[in-house]
Length: 313
Image (tube, rainbow, N blue to C red):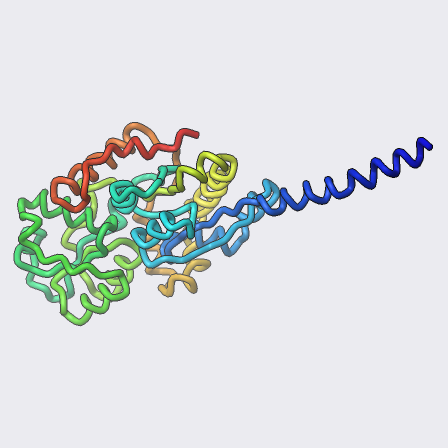
């Protein structure tokens, strides 16, 4: 009788166990990573499977989506197509101003030398001041867009006096190479690639902007899955530490993906500062300065407090 009772209990419990396993499987979360071709750390981590190795044991799948620049990536974040994104400084500001439920997760160290305003070889432009009345190619809402804003302000040139030709990097490179625009504001590795082809620097970001990159997520994902974001930051720090100590190997490994030869990539890496950090008051102060400038120029629709997008992990 006791055995029959135990068997009956077991038979009743079995469907419950199956349902429990199915429920766990159905609720398994996914870290959906948005990256750009120039996101070296993410590109190498993807190739090596380091995110999967760290996150799969925690119960997370990992998916990847490539974007041409930060703004379209954050549009995808707003639409739920990604929940972990890598961009420069301005895209996060534009996203917050547009009402995207975004949070800052981590920031890289500043690399102001890793973006520049370029002129073609043989151009008569001598300085940023000469851009008045000229056409400048730039990706709208990108770090290079803020470099242009800051450089013009520093040179005393009204923002409205320069014609902005808003193009993504591939189209901007074509316009720049053909002479359809007078200058190009852009980040590495496009900067290094153009430089190797003869482009000359009017100014880089030194003294004009920090040029940090940010890892961001959505409020919902960061609230529900802080362990996934902590694990992601751990992966990023380990990967960046390796890159900083192995620049030549990094350039060789990433060259096929980016489509530039290792010597060009090493030029970029020499301008790059490695390391990933949690957000600090100093970092937020830098972001607030950019946000206030964009609002003053009418580039974002409302004044924002960037700290409202802080991740409260």
